[in-house]
Length: 331
Image 1 (cartoon, rainbow, N blue to C red):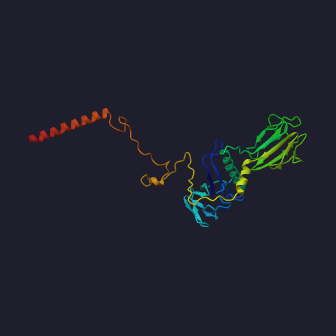
Image 2 (image 1 turned 30 degrees about the vertical axis):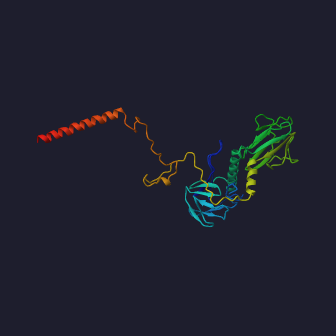
Image 3 (image 1 turned 90 degrees about the vertical axis):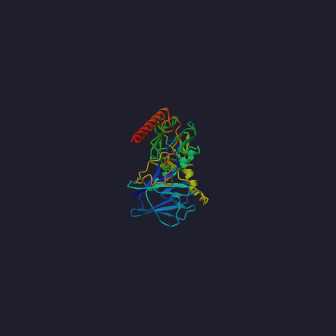
C-alpha cells in the first residue's frame, strides 16, 4: 500500500492543477522545509525537518521530529518522538500547513526527490501568482535588436527552439541568426542550452555553446549574434529564500482551520441519522432548518379550499352525533 499526501492549499488559481499531492512508498518519509525532505513544504512555520511518517508493515505511524511549532493529528498535538497510527482520511498539520492522507494501492511515478521539488515549486508559484507576480520560468532578451522579447518555459523537459524561422518558440529577427539556432530546456529549476548546428554559434559567459546540453545558470549571459539573453526562475529563487530563512514561531493558542473543499464529495456511512449527532457533521452536511412557508402556500397555513373541506367535515360529524342521540332517546 502506498501513501498519498495531499497539500490542502486552499483554492488554486485559475489554470493551476486541481490537487497538489505526492504518492510515496518508502519505510520513512520526512516532511519539512529542507531540500532533502521527501515532502518539501515552503512555509516559514514548517521546521527544516518537521515530522516523519514511518511504515511498519501495512501500518503508517506519524512522529514529530522535535519541530518548532509541533505536529497535529487532527486538532490534537502529538508529543515529540511519540508514534501515532494513521488511517486513510486523516488530516495532519505541520506549522500552518494542512495535509490529507490516503493509504491506497497506487503507483509511484518519477523520482521522489524530483517530485518533491516540483511540488515545492508549484506551491511557491501559486503563492507568487496570488500576490500578482509572474512565477513562470523565462528567458528574456535584455539587449540587442530583439530586446524586450520574453520566452516562458512552462513545460519541463521540452526543448524550446530559438531562431529566425517563424515556427520557432522565440523568433529572433537578427539576419545572422540561423533558422533553428539554439534549444533551451528546463528540468525542474535547472536550464540547459544546446547549439543546433547554427552558422554563427552562441556564447555562454564567453564560451562557445556545444551541440549537447550545457547548464545555464541564472545570472549568466547567453549571446546569440547581437542579442544578449538572461534566464530567471522566480519560483525557484523564492523557494531558496524560504528554505534559508529561520523558522517562524506560531503563538501556542493559534487555531488554524483546515481549508474546506469547495464541493465536498459525499462520504458513505453505515450510521443512521439518529446515530450521527449534529456536532459530528460538517456544517456543509448538516440538514437545513425548516423554513416557515407563507400563508396560502402549500405546506404552511390553510387556504380557502382547505377551510371549506374542514367545515363540511364538521357538519357531517355534527349530524352523525344528532342522529345517534335521537336513536338512543327512542330506545
